[in-house]
Image (cartoon, rainbow, N blue to C red; front, side):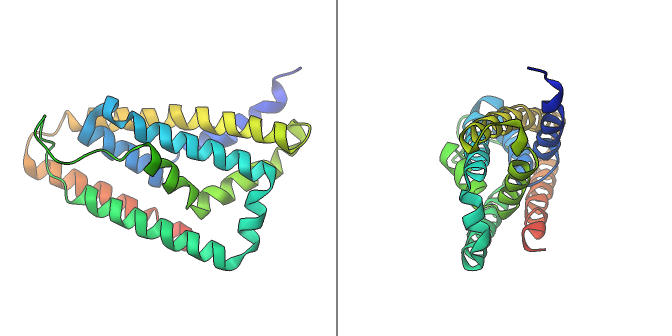
Length: 198
């Protein structure tokens, strides 16, 4: 079987997962404040959330969610409130305290939860399921294809954003610089909510 038919899918998914948004901002903030190793559960949770969302979209669940306006509104509202809370947590941080701090990185389950309440993510995965349905025989195989593609791409993309945050953090020397970075990352996370409502 030729690889060529899958190239557009890979380009679509890579573009979707590496472009700035809520998940990439969280990965960057986590890398800056907690380092790569402690950010792995968040990255894995977001990747699993996106993979299962893509598989569910291919199986038809997204069609149900998108057809019920009240459910869409509830998802939007819950996701927005959660992202605002995360933005507040990030913006309120100063320089990381090595070993003695009480702040904890966002975990695996929170990464999944955030993704599953993101209407933008549903729209993206539904679009992929509709656009690339011809690449697989039936919804199960399409779900597996999209789930694996979105999951692996998210792992790679979010790891890069996390490392970028880690490298950025190494240039910061003062408490004021850390506060500025964290406020900027919190503001970016708030800004990522706007497309959910527009």
